[in-house]
Image (cartoon, rainbow, N blue to C red; front, side, top):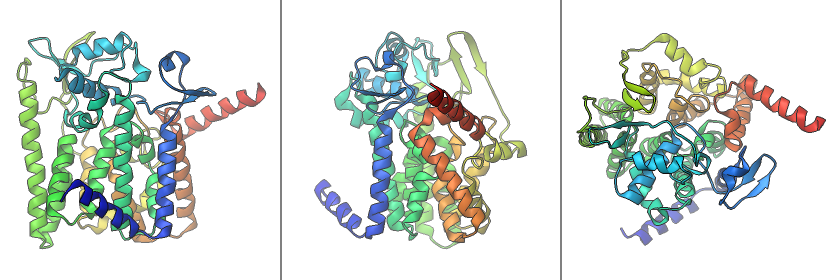
Length: 431
């Protein structure tokens, strides 16, 4: 099928969405796109050379990465499209000397190198190479400019918005649930930056609702390559489908995950062939920094109850303190099936990880891809109690606040965010 035919087919399918669904999608598009152009807080020095309109301590400006691993992914994209390699040593130097490599906010910053250095002095990223590879084709026409950053973010946003269309069309749920997914979860915050989590969410939505075997295979493969532990989603879903007698889907999903892991291991071993130690995926278990020797961290991979409690209930890095309505979905996981079993496996997987808190971020970053399955689970229970309505409204408050003003929500508890806002408003009105 030609690209033109695919586009016409997509438009025809969009026309099948009822008017209420179209309004819900229009609201989401406006909210997501508008918020991505609002950067706050930001210094005047960071806005030099950037088209912008100053608004208080923020600015209307092209989309920007904020913190965490995002600038390191962007830096790898720039290395691929500008240098044609994944040796990041010169890219970190360029960012430190005021270049655009790691984004507008990080010009002139001495970033910690998320890399390992091999025997030839080349620095390889400890993050998966496949997300930068996915972003590189759309960023290629803008190589060497400040526009690589907003293009990568807008591409991520477009993928997320496409996932909302699929969710609305294929889930069979009322259009209000797509608004819940978009606004009352951490998705809004993460979709306006460069993270693996929005992309894994897009993949998971596609796997949940696609009936095409080739599409399922591509999605399972893509998700596994973007983040290797995602392999448990297509594989666990394959097991459930096989037990239910849907053998063709099961074989396709299992094959996509297995092939993804094989490709990932082969690629990583090739890239790190000249380092002085062996590591299967080189995801940071071994790494060098400018001020520290090579560090080797090994942690046992078995479920720890305190980690499971943390990833769900920790006041800063847990899922439920910000989005308690999802507790209704977690309870429904006991029902089993191809939707719920992979979600439960994914949750327990991250309960085995000592770094369950996910580093810099908002709420539980690692559980973001789980959110669509949880929303489906919540909707299947048809909750109507006042407690649920209050929990949903409370969740929407934090989802919207973090989506509009992510720097306010990063690495803070709900109480800390509330106090910060109160102090800011008090100074504003007293002045």
